[in-house]
Amino acid sequence: MDVWNHSCQACGSPSSPLTKLSLGKDFFGRPYDRLSPSSDQNPRWYCTSCSLHKDFQRDFRDILSEFDKLRSGFVSELSKADEFRRASLRLHEIMTTLNAPQQTSQFLSNRDVTVLMERLNTLTMPV
Image (cartoon, rainbow, N blue to C red; front, side):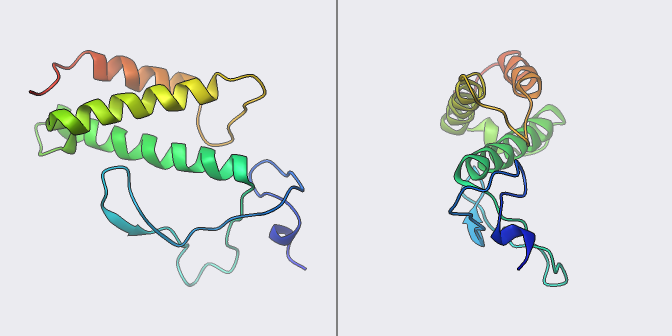
């Protein structure tokens, strides 16, 4: 039996159920395929807690990518006031969870989230 049938591949916890989501949308609602390429013979499986943190990591990356576009003068979802607010709130939600007792993320550091929150605060929110 493969390792992923026994434990979470992020934290090693033997808890169940383990999850591997295939299709989804990024933080800004754009569709993408979360599955590893078909050539990948070792898909990753995560416990419920690590799946949540993996979603946080994905949202963090999406927001960071849009922030970098905005700072570089390109079209960005963050130039829309509602998306800017939603992204700021999501970062606060992520930080709140990361700061909770007994929460350790294998995917994100509190410092990275704090830095992005600070960088967003330096921008003037679109109207």
